[in-house]
Length: 102
Image 1: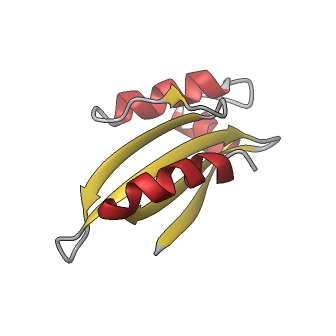
Image 2: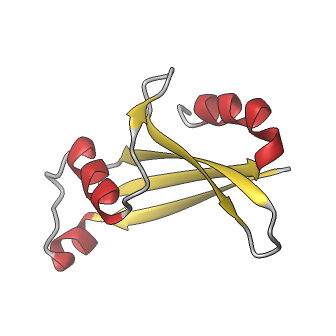
């Protein structure tokens, strides 16, 4: 099984936090995310998505693989987070990359 979640980070949130505006580029936003999360580095995947992958344990001590990509819309940045059981990452991560383009 796998899951997807989407988080919207509005440009007004960036202005209120003093970290950006609607003129902030996708690359600048990704750099802010990386600076706030030492263990995350975004790269360009095979479809041209700025993305990162990582693994983490859930509450039940099961390991999950995550694929995260970010988009810039007209009023917000959108963080799209896909996840699956770690043992299924070789099956799902390529699918997440494809789904992340759509």
